Length: 317
Image (cartoon, rainbow, N blue to C red; front, top):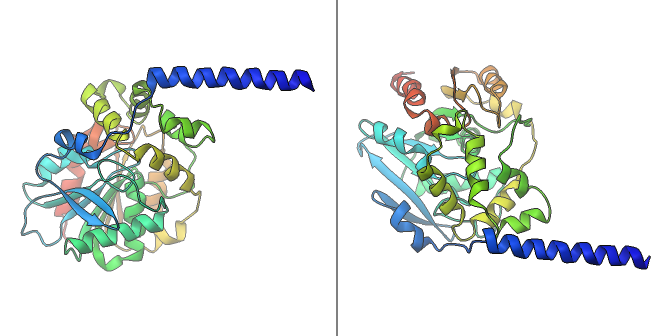
């Protein structure tokens, strides 16, 4: 018994030393919002107060467009993932995007509730605050799940849907970003809130690209710096704890809006078989599969992924 206690003490000491070393090598303090605004909140960025949060958003393009296009990013990302799309779409449409709570400059939900219902309620409050009664709603990954579930709850507010490698069905991934894996592991996820190697961030971004060579240093820098936004690392841990493997097939089948299902053929996080499932379950959908593209088409293959979106937006139903 004494031997066992001694071994446990030695292992605890070794673990403590290891954590200290990792902290010295890869530990980073949270960054305040003001320190990040100069780089990531340039015009036309604005902030909107909702439920104790200062929500970072951009509203640009055709102000006379009565049914704007609203774009929602995925887990760990920010409104910047739609930069190229927005730059093109703003010539004809009103484009609105925001940093979802838990990510980007918006930061965490004050109540740390990252359930899908809470996100859906947030989008309703956000749109209502901007005086938007109806929109074309598009989202990637987590943003896609929020989009279609928002359409289920608020059908009158959604004119069309664009689902980009969207989440929602019980998931069996072929590969998961390293940061997501660690965020789900007890104890280790606590370490993640203050030890965040830049290499881990790069690895996680490369994991969702079909071609890692497209991951520029500026992209890694953006993901890394916004991960360090105060509260975001804990928010990622909290968000991963909310992931539920719920089969919402019946809800998907109730969506009547015209829907574009846009998917990267080489998405390993949410494989292309899920695109086929959405296409099958949605009563009125068009399916477009993008070759040589991973989980974030609007970022990895912006021009190729935007083409079917432009075509879809111009179709009158």
